[in-house]
Image 1 (tube, each protein chain N blue to C red):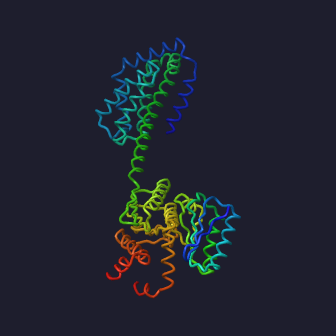
Image 2 (image 1 turned 30 degrees about the vertical axis):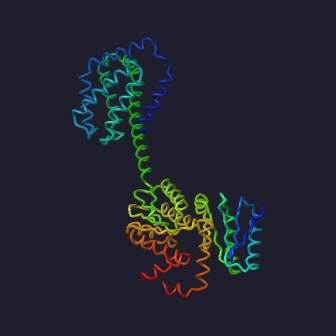
Image 3 (image 1 turned 180 degrees about the horizontal axis):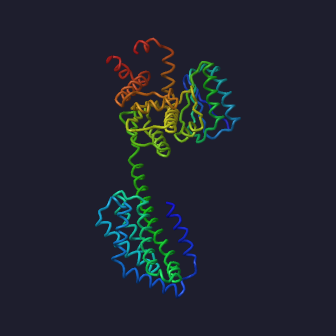
Length: 129
Length: 310
């Protein structure tokens, strides 16, 4: 099943709607990484609200997406992990270390806004702290 | 406990035995008559032996005597009728009375076994000249006596377990409040002992609350936790990580000196966890985090506010 990738301003939003096979996940990764460069994006949001199971391959793919997108110049944030899924993940040791996660799409957009802004003008931020 | 088990197995065998023959029913009647006749003397002997064995120390001698009388009468009645409902009900009521006073299981089992000994001894004395009859009397007395001991002990243990269940439930209900201090800031004060089941419940409640309140920062205060082992500490780490997956930062406050020493000594890795000394400091840190996060995306008015304060 194809995951639609939407463009919203400087960001790409991939909203996963149903359980994905490993092949679907790999495909999503390739498509996202290709599009990041093509559309000169600053951020990627992967919405997993609809997923009620997250296996090790899915977690690894999400982590790979984050690292690969960073190499291509975009921040990645995973949004919408369900409480039960989160607890199951940490029990299995799948903690998505080094990958930003926030509550939902709205928070994800706010997070990317703050990140891109911070990298664009770091000076006032440093002055404030 | 071993006594209970033994008498339980004996009583099972007794109940499987064929129905009492006419003559053994007669023997039982004779036995009951004997116990009725010597009620005063046997009851006193029993109470004396309870005191001597230093059982039921939580109760006064008068109380022991009063309960002994009631148990004795119920005992004889159960022997006579072969039905145990009255005795069961009595032992439940007795347990309700004496458990709050700190009477232990071994004491209850002990006194019932003492009564059994006292009565058996009196039977020996009465029939010592007629060993054959003594044997038959004991044949009909022992299964019933064992079943009585079993009934009383089980009644006591069941009552205890009921109280424990009740208390566990009460503790569970009042144990896990997740409080919202201000928008996007939750506090989870943990008080008392954390067992694996409670830890799990705490985590589930916290994660659900994070989602429901759209929390950004959570302060977990463990001032009220006396001890923490590696299992609980690791669970705490897992909770912190799961909260991060939901986009919330967790600050742990109030780790006591003892817990801090234990955790480092047993080598739990808490380096990923943000910790602050006390709850006040934790909330201040949380407010700072919230201000930092809000600033870049907030409206200009809110963005300027923290700056002008500094």
